[in-house]
Length: 508
Image 1 (cartoon, one colour):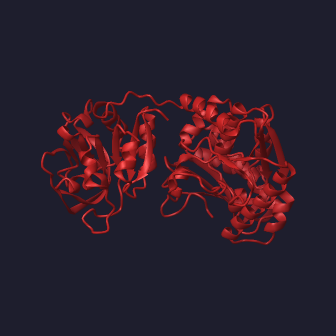
Image 2: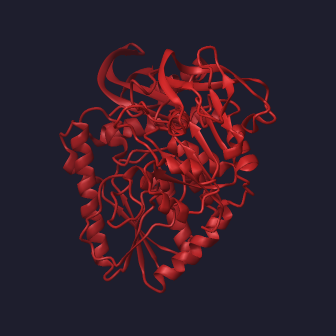
Image 3: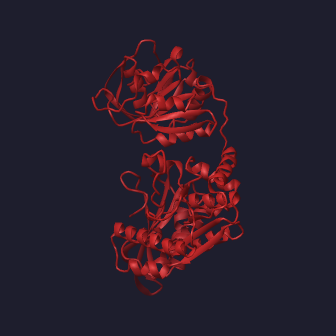
């Protein structure tokens, strides 16, 4: 990419990807690097600015993660967030000490509106705080630019050196004007021109794919998820007729999903191979109740099916994968030297004889992948597909897996999703779970003893944390009535109101 670049230096903060996404949303390209990346490597990126992330450590501890103090003397603007502000102050000669009163959650912050970070904003702001240490003595040349009831240095600034920091998290939704603060840093301090746009990325990747692949054939394991589907659509546009998509339908997908995936690609310039393997997978899963064992069985069987179908194609030189930027960041890798684990169900065999790996989405975040999918003409039911576990409904059925249970869950899940979408409920993920519990009920004049279905709907921006969605009683009532009346084998419905933490989004 020839765009201006901001480097996000990671010190163990859970929001590093969110920071990088916010920068891109502001029209500036961003990359994430470990906090201790060598300065020479950073200089090669020619960044217009650095952003230092939060992290769980105390900066004054001997083993705390650090960057070179010379980073703050490079003449490149720096914004420190949470741990990042403390690291900046500490590296520049300030003092960090434990808080007398720690701050967590949404906190009232009074900002100095003459500071460039807060240009155009009101003095009274709200910021998400999460810290047990704070700056007790400012470094020379710095001023305080914000304060809270218990934190006198909630933001700091050194205009001469273009060094700024905030103790709160501007990248999260719980800091309502946080994106504007980041935008001010990018455009008012770093001199950004806003030259990053996803349409430019599409053109660049098509050219790169054609250079890499030439006239050779490419194989892709198509799961039907957003990433692999957008990857397939992009490759089909770049190298029409040369792509072979193997769609392994393991029989554990949602209602009509396999047919929807096939329909989405029937008119594209690719070779679509659907393998209907439900009986094969269910045979392997018979009697298995432990969720991790389910995952391993499904992953292993997926590999075997993929291998068998690949061999039928003969000599294919390139393997494509829908790797996206968070996959690269979380693996800690800057290069894909080895074939990475399959996104959804398990690792592809490392001894498969490909001369190259094609990963055209590896520089994109999920929201950018969705935008690219729309520009490539993929239908909404693919582009807006909610996160779906690779093992599919196998880990939304508690206990053993049978065809009967799969049909019960498919129908109940479809009804819930229909009612949620019809009512335009604000939720980022919603689904049904078939518990392994049976409950007594009454249908007409008869006693029943059938399954309990749990409904789950959450609100989240990053899927690392979530809160349950406050679905109205009217929606829940309609959903319950429909499931009980339309799905045979269900006698009771419950709604899960647990957040993450302490729970996870999925039940298994």
